[in-house]
Image (cartoon, rainbow, N blue to C red; front, side, top):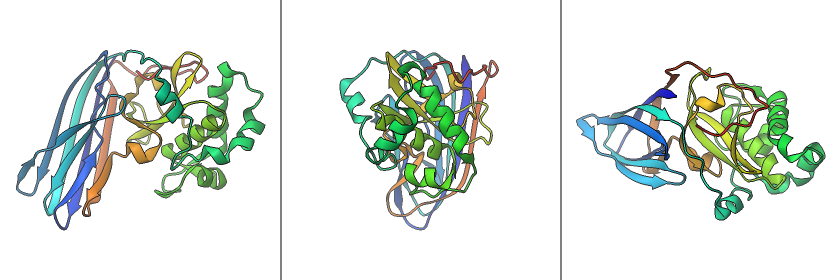
Length: 266
């Protein structure tokens, strides 16, 4: 499987500042990546420092001068990722509550809804439950909204769906984490957020939005929730994102996706 992905950002700064980017494809064993990252400021190209991130991710740190800076990233991704071994420390970390996934407040609710569901049926059950109770409405949630606000409002975007899935699964004792991905076939096209959950024998993808085939997704960043996986964060000073465009294409065509079939992140 070959996928062509990319992103273009425009960032405005009134004074020198530093930003953190997570737009590059994770360097996962078994996958070949040919890529280019070009960052152009008002007076020419800027250099980014690459920092290793969890689960084969990569963060790029860039100091921006005043003015408008353009970030252009493109990659061709070929192959299937190797299946990672279970890490007991990671399993423990991803069972715990986090900033946007307050699973410690959902225990009774999750048990009442899913306490009788068998382990091998839990992921599609939670995915279907969240998918039918939320409406996908761009602009309906704010940057500080977590799973509780999403459940009460009944609407959100992909990160909100993912946070609610993560929260319910962790409340049931299932390790779950958020993965930022490029998603061929996603409509509307954007950076996409899905969930990886560990059940029985490995990590499997859950996407309650059902906006893109899971087997064509390309990993960017992995973490506890959106606080760990944002495509751009300001580390120092002030920067304003003025433009963002994302592309993701499965060069061999989009695969079918049976939502009741377990799928590992490709």
